[in-house]
Structure formats: C-alpha cells, structure tokens
Length: 257
Image 1: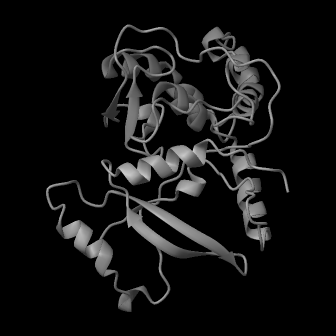
Image 2 (image 1 turned 90 degrees about the vertical axis):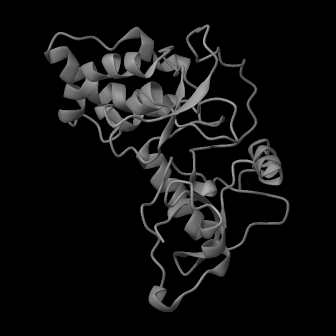
C-alpha cells in the first residue's frame, strides 16, 4: 500500500516565543476571488516534486487562476537552474503555489529568514543579468520565526537535530520540533515484509474511490537518535476532532528549554 506520510510535527517551520513586536501587515495581495484549494497542475514546472499536491488560489502573490500562476512562475525557471541557493525552489513555490491543508484557513508564508537567505544568494546572479530583486519579494513582508512560517533548510535540519537530542520534555512544555513542509513517498519499516497494519488496510479498503495513498498523521518519539513511529492514522478531511486538535496545537506557545 503506497503511503504518503504526513508528519504533522514536521509539517512547517515554527519557532514559538513571546512576540512583542507590532503585528505583521497582511501578506496576501488583494484579490476579489474566494480562496480555494486546487491540485498543483503538472504544467506548473517551477514546483515539480515540491512535496505536496494542493495549493491555494489566489496565492500569496495575488494570482487568481492556475493559468496566471503558470504564466508568471515560468519566468523564474532559469533562476532555479542557476543553483544560487539550495532553497530557491522552496521559497518561490511557497509564494506561487503555497501548500494547502484543509485544517488551515490560509497559506503558510515563507519565514523572513528564508526570503533573506535566497535573496542574498541569488541577487548577485540576477544582477549579473541586469535584474533586481523584485519588490513583491520584499523580505520585510514575511514573518519572523516567532510565527507559523516555512524556514530555511538549515533551520529545519537544526530543529530536527535538536528534536533527537531532547530525551525528555517536562510536562506542560513543548520544544521547537517543527521542520519544513515534508511528504514522503514511502515509509520504511524494519521487518516491514512481515508487518501488518489492519487499521490502515481497513481505511484504505473503505475509501477505494479516493486517490491511491492519501495523507496520514503520525506520532513518533526519539530513541537512540532515531524516530520511532508510535501511532499512524489516516488524515480524514472531515474529522472534526482532528481539526479541533490541530487548531489547538497551533495556538500553543512553546517555552524555550
């Protein structure tokens, strides 16, 4: 059974802390269209293999249709090929094709640090061809790490390493366990050839009309520098209790340990 594993605790880069700064301005460019989730089309070449399947329309840049997104994003394909920064594609797709999840009411924007890292890496290349860093990518528009946002790969890797190092978290507290948007095409299991999972097999058989695979919510704990899966359930779009749990989780403020 092909599994697309959604590890919610590694879904987005989040750094929770008290924030006394003035609230960030709205990141969305104004649009009169209602926000909806759309499958990422195969013709959106900029975001091939980005790791998720659905995007918000209008997007963060205010593009109202998939056709407009494809037309506008095509101009940035040459920059991807220059490899000026490892997160160029990640940053651009967070704007042109922001990940869409049913439990969130809007897109998750890139962190300011992600924007700045890509800008600093790619501006020299763009300048060599006579192109400035565009105003619509102004990094001051994006939130600091104190809010839900997509981090740089370096920040993501650091948080995952820190997660493994924490052997015990005091009751009532949480730590910065969030990485970047991730989806796995396959789940590796030790002795997987003899492993059975009736709960998931049943869920799959009861949803034969849906697309193969689907999304799953996983819980895991760190053991000897490995993440050991402790629970895996199907991500059901209409599950009210799951939605309630996720919304409550996103509102939590994590104390620095």
